[in-house]
Amino acid sequence: PRLAEWVERVRAARGSASIVALAARTDAALLGQAVLEGADQALPREAGAEAIVALVRRAWEKPRYAEQAASAERAAHEELDLSRFPGIVGSHPVMIRLLRRVAQVARSRATVLIHGETGTGKELIAGAIHTNSKRAAGPFVKLNCAALAESVLESELFGHERGAFTGAQARRIGRFEQADGGTLFLDEVSELSLSLQVKLLRFLQERELERVGGNETVKVDVRVVAATNEDLGALVKSGRFREDLYYRLNVVRLEVPPLRARPSDVLELASHFLVELAAENEVEVSGFTEAAKQALLAHPWPGNVRALRNAIETAVVLCEGERVDVGDLPLEPAGEGDALQAMVPGVTLEELERWAILRTLRAMGSVQAAADALGISKRTIQYRLQSWGLTAKELLRDEA
Image (cartoon, rainbow, N blue to C red; front, side, top):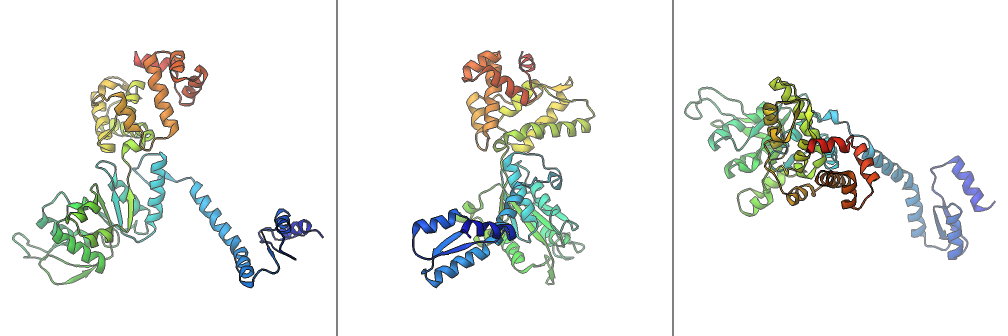
């Protein structure tokens, strides 16, 4: 039978089989025809043995590689279960990518370094690593390295024996021992003194410690997750941070994005905080005016999520109606250029389009005038507003 008919029979019986055709002679047209008729690969019969063996080996491994690729693609498109990350709010692509990495890293035993600006939620990310790991049933212990003096910090980390120093009237268990079987989160790790960096490095290498004033070696099973808003690489170059410790901590690095890089999460976070803080303060506030929403979106949020939460708390306290308005928000006005510049890092085209349409509509006062200014049709603006659950009438009323 013709090659095409034979290939069809093989595919019907063994759909995943790889088919290699050997041609009677070196003829490009003949080899090409074999591939056109269904062969995965084609070689002339006089090809060297090494070439044929390599081709057969590649064909043999093709189903395994195809399944691995399909599995990776399924995982990439699998919907992320956000319930695995309690307290973390956000659905911007940059956050979804981060949470996927968190889920992946959590399954390992590797030391993790979390980097991000102040107020981005590094502690929440550390907590998510712990709760998604095999250590979830163990303790999650936190320590801010910038909050304590060096002498106190050493005792907090490693504990001390009775009589180790004035006032040490009993043995004290340090954070490493408290976290045995779980995770220790060291925030602002860049603030550790060089002498404490040496002791932390020794622990990471040996997984054992000595309490202050003692000589007993204590072994503990602790996963260390560290965080900083500093550039540790630059601190290493300046001599303020040990290079060997840096590489020990930086086994896996996670970057927590600033709020300006995930602008579509601003309103989601604001609504989350509004519900939480309205309940705490026992007030009835149900949402935001459109003008307040636009002010929240336009603000650059240099203090990130923490600053947003503080702003919503102020608004909840000051709000006299059912919805938070611009005047209730403690925001300094930003220029148009500043607002756009703050949005651009990480912004999607859809978010940029929304910003441009809503800003222009508010500035021009009518759908037709906004359409003319943007060079699009009136119907396009109406369609976009409908997809966002908004109406021009509501927007212009709030602006008035």
